[in-house]
Image (cartoon, rainbow, N blue to C red):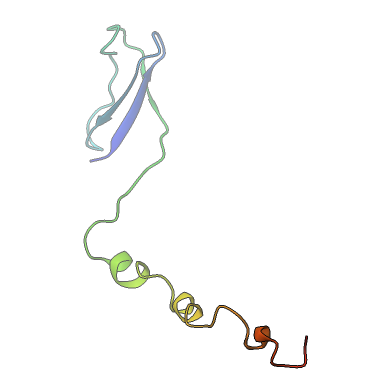
Length: 85
């Protein structure tokens, strides 16, 4: 069920409530009792649950990052054994 945000234009009371999309909008404010509730535009949210694409495809990171860790920390000529110094 979607969560809707309401704000009372009379007293400023704000509330969030889960409603079906077919339920009528709330009108009466639970704080002041006046018919001043207005539904606000709110950002929708979602949660990834279970063992879906995130678990199987992206959780472990990219393969390029794992190959970078196998490279030596210092270049081969850092010991002074080549003519670049």
